[in-house]
Each structure stands twice: as C-alpha cells, then as structure tokens.
Length: 168
Image (tube, rainbow, N blue to C red; front, side, top):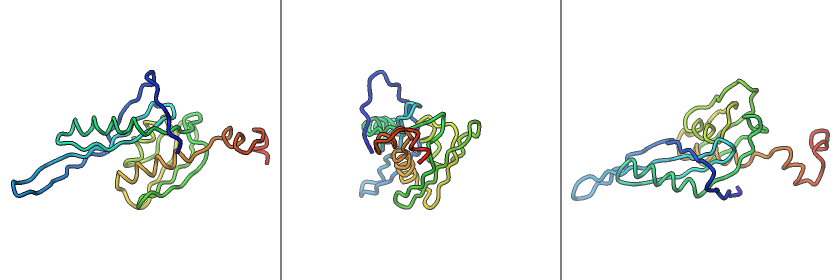
C-alpha cells in the first residue's frame, strides 16, 4: 500500500461508518466514551480510514476524520468500476469485489458501501463473508482496493507494451 500525499486543493469528503459507545466502570460510576470509524475520499480514487475516540460523538468523528486524512491510498477506478476481481481477508472479515457493467449500481452492504462510495466507485458487485465487524470490513475493503492494479500499471511493472498485457 503506497501512501498518497494530499494536496490542499483536493476536496475530501468524510463518511461515518460506525459509532460505538464504550463504557468504563470505575468506583466513581460509569464513564461513557465514543469510538467512531470514519472514511474519507475524494470520489476520484483516493481513500483513507481513521478511528477517533472521545467523550463526545462530534469530537470522536473529528478525530477519526483527522486520522483518516493521514493514511490515504490511491485506487485505480476505471469508468466507475474496478479493473478486476479480488478477494481479500483481514482478521475475520473476507470481502469479494467484482467489476460490474455501467448502470449496475453499487451492490454492497454493511461497512463496505461507504468505503466504495467515498473512493468514487459507482458500479461494482461486492460480497462480505465471515465477520461483519465494521472495523475489519473497512480494513479488508481498503486492503482489497489498494491491491488492485490496472493494465497500465501491469504493463509498466513487466516492462512490456499494453497490447502484450491483453494478448499475452
């Protein structure tokens, strides 16, 4: 996963994936804090995620957004879909992504949908297997997206022409 430097002119939109209320019991009573998973993306192939923890929901979301801006990755998005199929595991979560024809829409559920929306993918078939834990689903989806390679990248890495990538 190669990190991306964010320019000040790039407009990143944040999406809240999940919020969790955490209780700590002390002898003085219960202390409530909030943990928020936030995804940021520019809708054009850049995505990042972050976890923020604070005593109030808004502060947790703000911290999560700042953390998400620090670990951005670049994803190849071709005509609103992904270049090829991919299946990735992270912890107990397993995600499967398949490119779809234009007009299919975003067929994804759970914590995968905000990740795919933020990166700018409009047509994809996605399935999550195993754990539905939003932490691991977000990480698995971003790992899968970061492992995608388009034909131009493959040709460059192999040192061959674009026609040889498709024709062998």
